[in-house]
Length: 324
Image 1 (tube, helix red, strand yellow):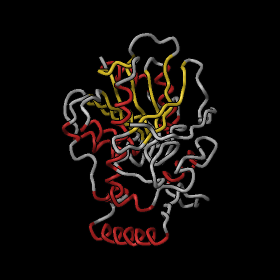
Image 2 (cartoon, rainbow, N blue to C red):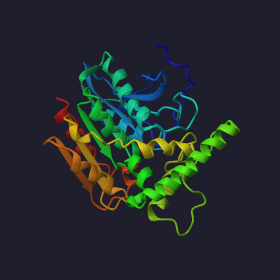
Image 3 (tube, rainbow, N blue to C red):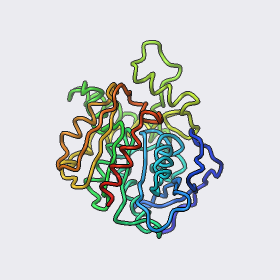
Image 4 (cartoon, rainbow, N blue to C red):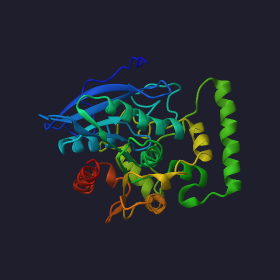
């Protein structure tokens, strides 16, 4: 299968500085739906032999030039070959229509990254891990439940996007509220078809209301300021297609997470509004190769880019322990 010809930016347009300890290049690969994905590949300078490899994605509505690229570059500095990729339909990756999210296709994106890594001459195909941030933490767990080639999974500041879409924040939605939400979304489907285009749900709210919840302020501080803004980021701009929420409401992604046999590290901030996603997901995991790490005083977005808060020493040691 030929990869779609993508237009890739060659300039360094990340939200973090370029490291002089790694080599960087753009690559593409395809998933089993025929969608071509764009990624940044990072490898340690002067590396020899076959390396352990890690595929990184997230947060939900971000691009590889933001948090995932920072994680990937930092782990490459520590001796891993890494890729940070844009999910299907977003960023520099292919797929049409644009700005669609899918619990199935986005889980598949992780396995497609494993496909690519598995056939690289400088990668040990028996030593491949994944790392999902925010909404892609849930996708990573779903991929780990399905893809036995994945030997280690890390979920950082995880969201279960199917749970939050079906039940609302803090499980505040009941069946009647879900029904009304479905009515509205299906009415929007009709409008989209009539108009020949897809309504965007909107990215992070701007301007920021004074009475916005603290976590919305945290998102604004990352996506709407120089700290994390990127022109291709959905959250920094117009957001996802509104109707993307339909499939997430109907397809729980963590159904078989209790069957994950490979190693899993779940990381979350103590003061994050989303902490319950990680704690509840961890309760369902089985085996002595599963760990939950709560970072004192950290909020959700601290684990996006705060180098003094993201526990890279722990990430490195966990990957090395289980990518033997």
